[in-house]
Length: 244
Image 1 (tube, rainbow, N blue to C red):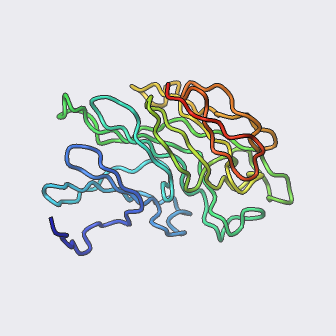
Image 2: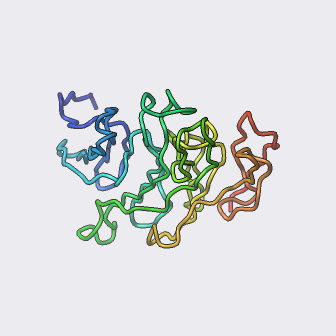
């Protein structure tokens, strides 16, 4: 099938995209790489593309700036559920102290759900807020002016990976403006209540850490044997993974 060029058809900057069933592609851009939109919290830039009609329709956006977030599919049955986590807290030029010239990352996450494949006429095509990712270690003044523990942790442009049991691991990403480190090196595994994200869900570490650095793997219900990403700053040995 040849390419069809649809001039100015996207309507928004499609930084992220995913097929969400029913012949539709969800795409979104958060602040669309616009610092002023980030500062004004104007990040309603999400669309649905119909692969059959080639029509684009406006769609709701997550309740945070998902520009440069990470995403992965959840292991749900009879429905597409698409997890988006992290994003842009602040642009690199406006971040102060240690994180100046670096994009600061958010702790937020949300799930986009399609309708059920069994009853497609009801529900779906909407976002639900999910648990925030974990806080990190706070920097001290004057390394960061007026640090706030709520602005630690977070992940700008993380990698999210779906596991065989439907959980998701978040790796890496630049943390928030008050974090002590330049990278979020501690992998976290989502703990799902598959039917209702935000109701008892959480992000759990799959390695112990000291001073923000991995020391050893710990048992985790996400994967048996516990695999974790070993950053260059970690002295911990790599571990092999076994599916649960």
